[in-house]
Length: 461
Image (cartoon, rainbow, N blue to C red; front, top):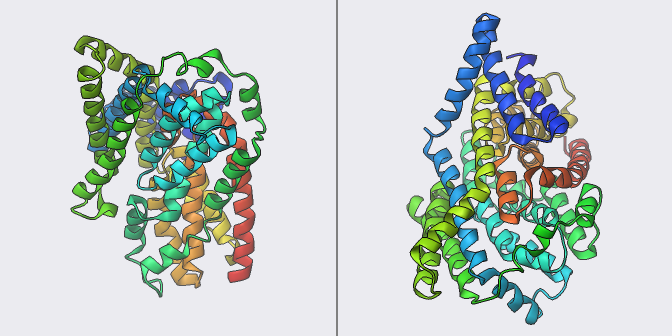
């Protein structure tokens, strides 16, 4: 491992800022990662260049060899079809009209609160939270002339931060599995519960979202997006005539309850042990079937018309599916290159004890941002942080919360995170616009959390 391992993510960031093209950035980073791996293995420059080009293709193909990755990609396409069924049938328009007429979402503030609490209550799985809140709120945000960028920010900020605070889900089970093998002087469950009040990034993120929702104020690039609302974003759903609310609510309810049921099924009765990728795919397929039956036999649609509607919906999401595919391939390539371990090693060397939690938070943020995965970051940093707790007598909950918060921070801000991509899909917002408009809010919460971990380190260590 060397400084060369951080070159690919740096290149990705440079290309995104320079060309404003995420796919080109991911391809550049992936090829450079494969080339560097061959150079470090002793290959000649020419051989490394050719091998890197071919290796990047193989790395992308290998992504499909993982059932979890394949499910994510198929699910991403199917969501496009489901959204098209709900939207083109007039179900979303009918639901929007119902909420407005009954006063439930009669103002921008109430609409924002509805979106916020939808994300809070659907805490079982981050992608399900994003999809549910996004589907419910897209038409409402259009009606009240609020940008899709604002919607993407709210649903993204109430997914992973909520999942890592409530922990009665696969996130909690995963982290519990990572720390259970260490003798921390107290039970792993107690340590995990102790992280809840100390997960400063998640709390600051939720506070900022509530500030945005309640005051209606937006800042930075988000303000520019609000001022430049496109006609497409304003009228996409409202142009469709309202029909029946059940065309939206029944498929949506099927997806939510199907997700819970499949989490229980795949976890053998234990929801925290269920497979998120399997459950969300099965639930989406079931919701699609329900939507098809409703529209085919109750809505007067013909089979060929529904097929066209579904494929048109999938085609809208194809660029984002490509982004998810490339981000998964890049993440695997960077793990093989040792990028995460190298960054963690730098952070953990020769440090004052009180600053260790703050720097683990930074390490988690950088690793998660550059690799696009918070769970991968947890897997790398927990084996580094927990031995420090044991050997240096540090506060286990504080150190673990810093690792978890850093992973969430980087994942929240990363343009190559699958959660970022799904948030863009669910809200109908351009991916790069979502990243740019959300970044100042994420950095504000991150800076506040960094200071909080320094203070907490001084007080407790």
